[in-house]
Image 1 (tube, rainbow, N blue to C red):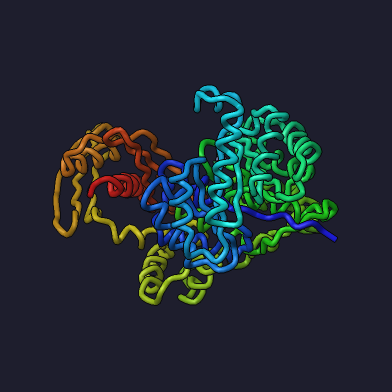
Image 2: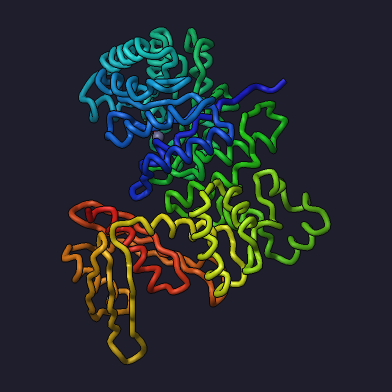
Length: 498
Ligand code: KIV
Ligand code: ZN
């Protein structure tokens, strides 16, 4: 008989804290419904006091989702808890996630407080949250660097106050796997009343050990894991859902099961990557483009003779059906619709017609259309509704001549033209746009990626643009790399030009 491990997904809270990856409420609902379909037990939908957008998203996700518990984050502050309770009012199952830092770094430098005072604040927060909901999770922020004896006292006190789940975050991603496992075991062995709460892991990936630490926590008694799709999250990210789910599926000997329908993992991963404009690194375990690609002759030969000689996971188990990945100009509308559905994108008839027209144009230029291309087409559709659109772009460049570009922008229905030179074709085009907008922006990061190999292929551009002290993220994809760069710049400026 296996033990059940609860999957707590925080893609929409910790994951969404990544600069430039913010989603609007409609996109968050789309992700939440897909997470429900995937089989997660808890969805952390946001931090309601942090912004009206987060508050509203928690309300709308609560209405849209049936089975998973909806969780809202708070600090150990009464007002936060009241606002979270209000945001959760439509949730069928609800949880407040409240907490406070327990390491000496937090106690001394963040709160200028004492260990005793922090215990009092933790207990008061849990008791206050219990007035609104039955299910209260407590997080001991920076538990990874907290003294185990003190941590055990905090955990014991909050369980006594009514906490149903105790979260032990390795907030800075500092712990070694054996150390994190020992911390969980210490709590299991020393906290009286620990059997009345579920211990949760919450590991960050600063040293690349998030998944190892999470599994070590589970092996030592944790029965909830806090994870994100594709491991996204602040800095180096959080533990990735797909890695934990597939480790437990591959190691049946551990006798620990999750509710995750692993066949939905690939579609979920692509949906989050596409909505957040956050590329998945090609060698990312489970969902990276190369995760199942065997390029060496020896490996290919082995896999063809018997898949298990080099593959421990059947790609079909994570929803990758190799036969359906590539579409061509001969693929019909139904094939495109099916592919989009596998990738978690449902379009109405009108949007599908537009996507199919764009698909045929791209298929004329590019022989094989893969999942990234398909998602890029749907992303373009989203850009159609932007306030600033590119009407045309003409660039002249070469060796021995100064690059010049002329650009026409459509801003809220009015057309504006400008021409400029620059150090290169992209610089010339951006200078022309800046003339129209008359704003001082600085391109902080500019990353070009080929989507696949080959001369006629699509290039993706990720750009970070600084304006008025804040950094905005933009994405563009086009067979012409200068056009992709301009699209990325326009995508970024659409986020601050109102
Ligand atoms: O990393 C962390 O400590 C957190 C808490 C707020 C749960 O995200
Ligand atoms: Zn975190």
